[in-house]
Length: 63
Image 1 (cartoon, rainbow, N blue to C red):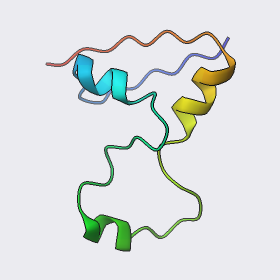
Image 2 (image 1 turned 30 degrees about the vertical axis):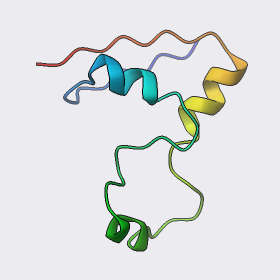
Image 3 (image 1 turned 90 degrees about the vertical axis):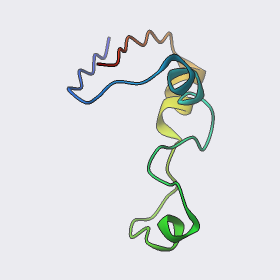
Image 4 (image 1 turned 180 degrees about the vertical axis):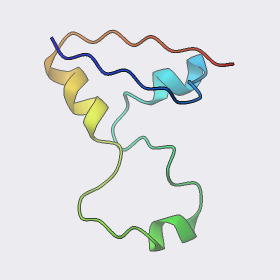
Protein backbone atom coordinates (compact mmCIF):
# COMPACT_ATOMS: atom_id res chain seq x y z
CA UNK A 1 0.00 0.00 0.00
CA UNK A 2 1.14 3.51 -0.81
CA UNK A 3 -0.54 6.43 0.93
CA UNK A 4 -0.02 10.04 -0.03
CA UNK A 5 -1.27 12.87 2.16
CA UNK A 6 -1.29 16.39 0.79
CA UNK A 7 -2.16 19.57 2.68
CA UNK A 8 -3.12 21.51 -0.44
CA UNK A 9 -6.41 23.23 -1.23
CA UNK A 10 -8.21 20.09 -2.38
CA UNK A 11 -10.05 19.46 -5.65
CA UNK A 12 -13.60 19.67 -6.84
CA UNK A 13 -15.27 16.41 -7.86
CA UNK A 14 -14.84 17.29 -11.55
CA UNK A 15 -11.13 18.02 -11.09
CA UNK A 16 -10.66 14.77 -9.16
CA UNK A 17 -12.21 12.75 -12.00
CA UNK A 18 -10.19 14.57 -14.66
CA UNK A 19 -6.94 14.10 -12.72
CA UNK A 20 -6.85 10.39 -13.66
CA UNK A 21 -7.01 11.06 -17.40
CA UNK A 22 -3.76 10.90 -19.37
CA UNK A 23 -1.92 14.20 -19.77
CA UNK A 24 -4.18 15.91 -17.25
CA UNK A 25 -2.54 18.72 -15.31
CA UNK A 26 -3.46 21.83 -13.38
CA UNK A 27 0.03 23.26 -13.95
CA UNK A 28 -0.56 24.38 -17.55
CA UNK A 29 -3.31 26.85 -18.29
CA UNK A 30 -1.85 28.82 -21.19
CA UNK A 31 0.48 28.46 -24.15
CA UNK A 32 3.10 30.47 -22.28
CA UNK A 33 3.09 27.83 -19.53
CA UNK A 34 4.09 25.22 -22.14
CA UNK A 35 6.97 27.40 -23.28
CA UNK A 36 8.28 27.67 -19.71
CA UNK A 37 8.54 23.95 -18.88
CA UNK A 38 12.13 23.39 -17.79
CA UNK A 39 12.01 19.65 -17.04
CA UNK A 40 12.03 16.58 -19.28
CA UNK A 41 8.98 14.40 -19.56
CA UNK A 42 5.35 15.41 -19.75
CA UNK A 43 3.07 16.39 -16.91
CA UNK A 44 -0.05 14.48 -16.04
CA UNK A 45 1.08 10.89 -16.50
CA UNK A 46 1.60 9.77 -12.90
CA UNK A 47 -1.98 9.30 -11.71
CA UNK A 48 -3.11 7.79 -15.01
CA UNK A 49 -0.23 5.30 -14.91
CA UNK A 50 -0.81 4.34 -11.29
CA UNK A 51 -4.56 4.00 -11.85
CA UNK A 52 -4.05 1.70 -14.85
CA UNK A 53 -2.17 -0.95 -12.83
CA UNK A 54 -3.57 -0.71 -9.30
CA UNK A 55 -6.56 -0.14 -7.06
CA UNK A 56 -6.83 3.54 -6.26
CA UNK A 57 -8.91 5.43 -3.74
CA UNK A 58 -8.89 9.22 -3.84
CA UNK A 59 -10.30 11.32 -1.04
CA UNK A 60 -10.42 15.08 -1.44
CA UNK A 61 -12.36 18.08 -0.24
CA UNK A 62 -12.39 21.80 -0.78
CA UNK A 63 -12.54 24.50 1.86
